[in-house]
Length: 449
Image 1 (cartoon, rainbow, N blue to C red):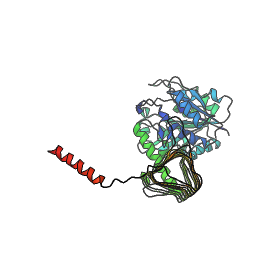
Image 2 (image 1 turned 30 degrees about the horizontal axis):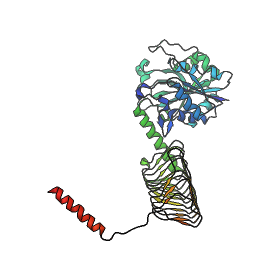
Image 3 (image 1 turned 90 degrees about the horizontal axis):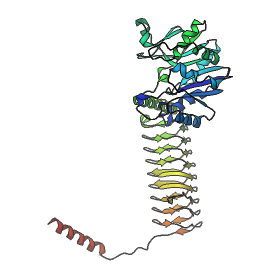
Image 4 (image 1 turned 90 degrees about the vertical axis):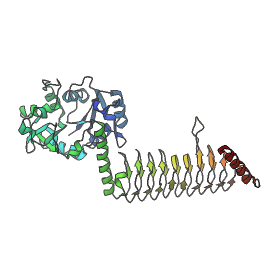
């Protein structure tokens, strides 16, 4: 049976105290909306419709950046969740299959849960609602059910004392045949204090029409919604705890896992060792057997097997490290191809460069890649030796097996096997240091008197 996603992302999120639409606030370097879309994509939807409202242009741009085939519709008036779902009707014209309603601010619904809801549909349920056992039910809507057969949803403010004692709560996520869902929504009224059309009325209307409604349950953590900055921090903590546990289950060693922060798309191979306080930005792949030492930051880079990174290293977007590369303390690499076995061990910046296999980059080396307008590339050949405190003024090539003298400023290409020296000749002035210091100390003594 084909499946469609309807993702509600129209809310302003006033409690976030932000100009940014709520669903674009990030967890693990990805908008909340992207997390919801990523989970939904696991059920291979034939169509994805996102209902945007506040900040609609920004929401649409983020949605299309993640899924160019997604259709974005607008809810111009905020008239409730039922009204929001109805805005997707035109985008699903001609679609025959199941629709799942998700929320852009509820990022952690798992694919296994969505598949369980679709299985309930295949087993004959007309409407399927996702519920959870709440530790503190509070203001959650209660699911009034017998076993997995759902009778109705009762909002907390309308519930009796007996209904408030129910701990099975409504997540808001719902699945039904798309045509059936829209037909039932046409019957939803707005005779309530808010004057809104609620999606939660659908199960009751289905039961009144002699349709079946079922509850599928999940862990409460999956239903975490983000409405405040505190919720956002809790969502980040929840993501990180799960991502770290998954990484360690797959063979990654973390000596202090609570200090490691992963991105939503981080890929780490087995037998990687991650020391404390390592931070991953988006777009990082680390292959098996690498070591990431403490206080390193990685973003948009690829680290091959056997590499040793850090401590205090920074890998920026475009850093591609081949096998066995060493990037040491206080070294920054950006948009550079570093070949097998090369060493960049101390206090260096290597940007917009190609570094050959087994090259050795001395402490304090800088590739001077920017002229104020354009970026230029530096090429360092295989087994080249770059002396400490060398400035390589791009565009420039240092050939295979070539060397640069410490403190050189290299502005011309260095042929294979040559030694480049570019520094002033040293001159020693006999006794001048002692005479100068004596003069300075005498001047200081006069000032103090």
